[in-house]
Length: 198
Image 1: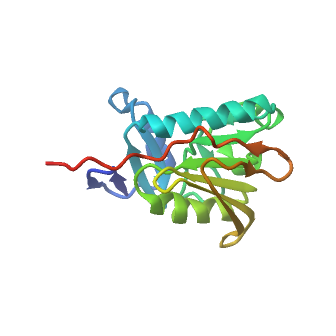
Image 2: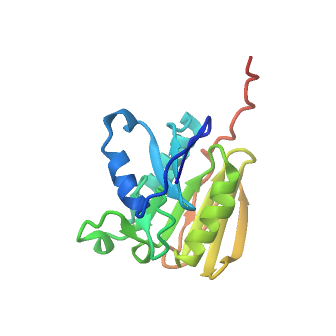
């Protein structure tokens, strides 16, 4: 088992059920400010996101809610593949699908997940792409403020997704059914250049 952050990696002893470790870490008060996920068998700790990241998540959540969808921020999702338990920036679903208040939320109850890229692009664009697709999440939207592009992945199958539609910031993201509306991206901001560190 490995605990990862963007700054450091600490190796721990393997445990039989990493989901139990996840539940334990979620109860540690000192870790309250961190997003804790299970990605490809590793516990990943991520510090709070930047204002531009959070602004995009908030804006998208509001748009889904205006269309009567439930947009749940950082809701843990699971599938039979026990090596993953991500917390997407948004899990979009219906009120009926969450009526019994499941936590983590089974992937079959989710219609779309959103990840806004922060640091490690490979996690969102490779590992999570594969897992969401093989877990049959119908739509996976990656919003990348590094380059000002959004990628909507559709038609999940055993290796990820069969199709990808790329949209530049400022242009609408057309969502297929069961949504049938477009997401406005005109308020999305590209990350500014990183300041050099000393």
